[in-house]
Image (tube, one colour):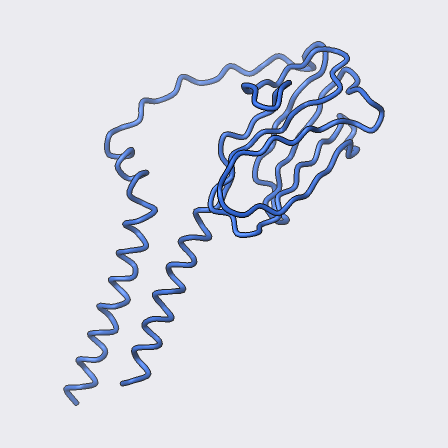
Length: 176
């Protein structure tokens, strides 16, 4: 019976840590021609630097890699840095030759070994016609409440369920 308490605490901590790990991530990922600029996917000929900008949240020393490919799949730029906490980062990407030549490029953002976000962009004239963006669907009040509550309520409910199960097991063992 005394073993039940440490097992319950261990399960609760595991659920809490898993919830924290799932909250990590990138948001507001974009490319721009200035370190704090708005999102762009079309840059003028002769561009020497494209800024990869992103917000990161609840990171715990996680490696984040920014990699730029040309239209042939060659790596033109790569930078990996470990991030802790939350904040905004602006990474100045530049090719080894000094300027980005006209054409299509791809920037990948990796969290660990996995691609988290991908952005296609062009220097000079667009390589392909831009795809029309669908009209956004208005967010319902219920989904807004869910988005605000999910990071606290779901782990709390899981912890309460573990405690309830532990209590029920204890009651069964005591009654014997």
